[in-house]
Image (tube, rainbow, N blue to C red; front, side):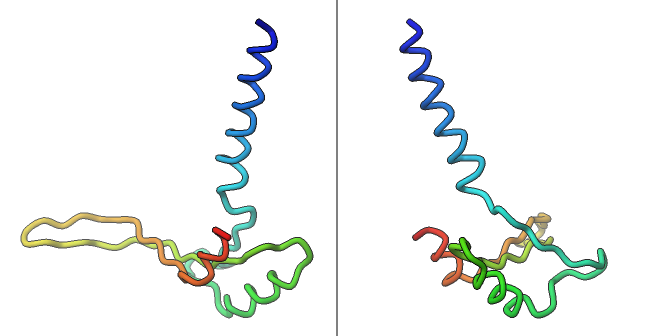
Length: 92
């Protein structure tokens, strides 16, 4: 019985690590000023981060609010923008 429990816990641990660490960003850089909506010179910052030892990929992402409207219906949404080429390197 204990062998079965250990196998289940080992599988759960591997799944937990993959879903919480490997599939999420490790570093998030935000603007210093809360009123700014983007980071100036983000390409320069991305290049500098990419040069660091152990960095596999860098993918800038823009998060913001938007509104979609169709006929008389309007909905607020969360908008996420990525650079497709940079984002694909994360999947390699």
